[in-house]
Length: 301
Figure 1 (spheres, rainbow, N blue to C red):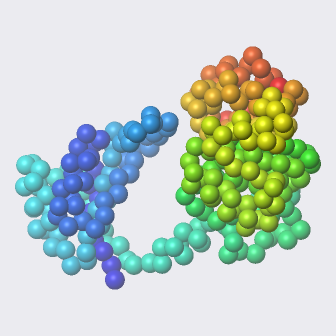
Figure 2 (cartoon, rainbow, N blue to C red; figure 1 turned 45 degrees about the horizontal axis):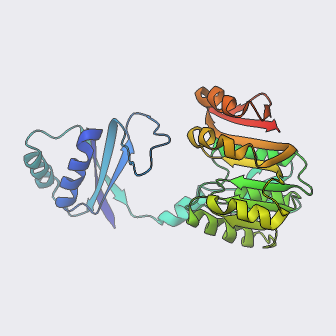
Figure 3 (cartoon, one colour; figure 1 turned 60 degrees about the horizontal axis):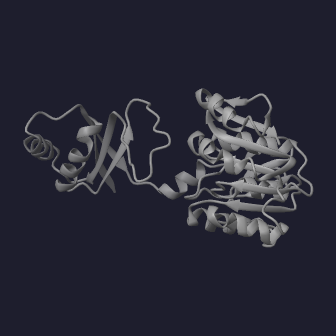
């Protein structure tokens, strides 16, 4: 079986109207994609911004009359169609194709991220079994990879860790498997917390060593674990984005103990100075570490 896929180039202000026209003409699905390599970072709550140059890809049944479809769209628009091209899409096992694209990754000498359907390349290493899912964090993105690289080469034995914006829980799980004693995973997305718990269970993490909570419940969790919210932990990790890192700075700088460490990631090169400044009064930052356009900051309280 195959499908007909129509790709149309348009602008952000026309994209939603054109999407609706395609659906009205029988499109099975419409996908909107960036058409000019324009990153959209940190949208506001409730916002769904589109790229200035947007490509719409509409999937139609294979027996669709292409000429009639194009004529109908042109008549609905009231003018000639924007630039377009057409392709035939052959049926595939898309799940298997996605799985094939995700393979084991090494960080440092001893840490591996391994999908559950693969045999660990080094059975004696610290292997995190992790499959791609809805929650952010598999090690493929530079922001997560830089954090994993740091964890892999720094002593974790006996540490207490807060992973703020935990996503899949990959960083907290890595810290625990590398020797940390306790990890508190915080996220404002309940689905991320569920993913974290499931991934921890898959990796044999004792439930008493990995705790999850929403941001508003963190103080209660800290008090239950340490007897006081002022106790502080050994390491705070926040792999989110520059805007939230700056906004949360007053909160995050109070989470490490005196002498404790903080690791911040999800920062673009041009945002580094602003993030650094937000933490400068409480944290002695080291020189930034960069991969591609992304920055990781490490410091000590």
